[in-house]
Length: 581
Figure 1 (cartoon, rainbow, N blue to C red):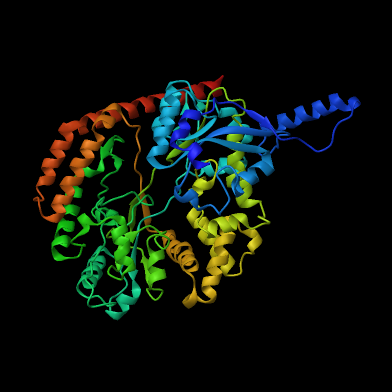
Figure 2: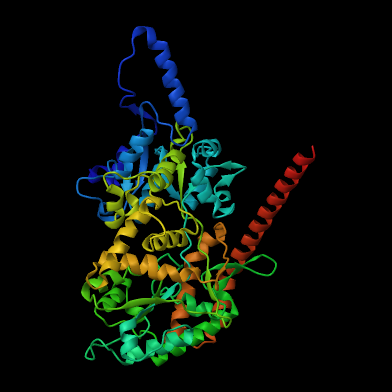
C-alpha cells in the first residue's frame, strides 16, 4: 500500500472532491415515509454540518495529503493510516473517513505538497507549513474556515486556542477570515540539567543550582569516571547547534549558559521601542562565548563535540561515559531510555539551574505553532476539519472511556502522533503543568482514575507501577515517572521567567540570505569556542552579518511590524466607531 502512495503516488493524485459511501440508519422507509425520511436526513446533514459532533447519515470520505512517520509511525501490526484507532473513532462519532492520496514524511513530504500545489492536484485537506499556507492564500486556493470554526469547533478546542492568546489564530487570519487551523506547541519550560546522581554521591558533589555548579560537576566527571576508570570520559555534552529551541531538538544545547549572560542567540527579540533585533549579534553573546571558550580549554566541555552527532552523544551516555547534559523534561524518553536499559542502576536526576543573580531561570518562549491544517477552496465539507479536531483532542481525551484500551496502548506503546489522520497536536499552552498536577493528585489518592483524561490515565498506570517497585521498573515505567513527575515538578518554580521572542514572517531578504548568515554565525561561534579564532572575531562577525543582509532583513521586519501595527490601530478605530453608532 505504501508503495502505491508515496513518491510515485504523485502520478495518481486524485482530483479533489467528495466521495459518498456507506449507509445511514438501518431500516428501509416505506413509500408513504419517503418525504419524511428525506426530511430527517436533510436535518441530520444540517446538524452534522453545523455542530462539533453531529454525525453524517452517510460516510463523508475526504482526500488527504498524509504526513507520516518513520516505521509506519510504530502502528500495531495490521493497522494503516486509513484504518487505526484514530480513524475508527472518527468514523464512529462523525462518520468521516480519510482517503490518503499522498503519504510521506520529513522534507520529502513538503516536496510532494509543493508538487501537488504546482500541478493543482490539491487534496481536500493537507497539513502544510506557514510558507506554504501563505502562498496558497495569496493564490486564492484556501477555503474560508471562519464560520465552520464558530459552529463546529467544540468549546474546549476554542479554549485550547485561547490559552495561547489571540496571536495564534491571527497568524492564519487574512482580512478578518480564518483560513487554516494551527497546531499548538505547548510550553516545555526551560532546559533542565540531567546528572548522574549516583556519580555525584560517589564523588561527594553537592546538588547543582548555578552555572558555576554545572562547571564544577562537569569538570569533576571529566577527570574522574566513577563507573569505569579505564574508559575515557567526557564532561558536559554539547551539540554543534549550541542553542537549539527548547523542546525542539534541544538536547545538549547551551541555552542556559547564554541566558546566564542575558543572551538569547538564534532568537528574534524586541528592543525598548518594540522593534525587532537579532539575539545572536547582541554584545552579551560575546561574553557567553568567552566563557564557553574557557570551558572548552579547561575540559569542562566535551573536547570532541564538533565531530559528535546526536546519536554519538546518546551512545556515550548509554556506555556510562557521559554523566551530565542539558535537555528538556522529556530526556528520559530520549536519550535516557537506552541508558536505563543498558544500566538500570544509573540514577539520572533533573535539576533546575538558576541563570540570574536573583535566582531566576530565564528561557525563551517557543513559536506558538509550526504547521497548519488547510482545506482546498471549493471543497464541499470544510467543517469536517474542526469536527475531526474536536473528536481527537476533546472527545477522545476527555469523554471517551476507551473500552478496548486502544488509545492507552497507543500512548504507552510510543505510537507516533503522525498516526492521526491530521498529524498535528492541540493542547493547552500549560498542558505539562495540568498533566503533572492531575497525575500527582491521582497518585496521592486525591483524584480517581475516572477524573483523568485518557492520556493522564495511561501515565497514571505506569507511574503507579514504578512507585510500587522502582528497582525492577521497566524502562517505560521509569521514563514516565522521571519525566512526567520528577522533571515536571521542577517546571512550576515561581522564579521561572519566560523571555518573549518574536517570529516574524520571512521576508524576501530572509529567504535569500538566511542560510548564508546562519552558516557564518555557526562557523564564527564554533571557532571561538574551539580557540581557533580570537574572541574579538565576534565583532567582525557582527559587522559582516549586518553588511551581508542582516540590516536589510531587520529593516523589512520593522516595516512589517509598523504595517501590522497600523492595521491593528485601524481595526481598533473601526470597533470604537461601531460602538458609538
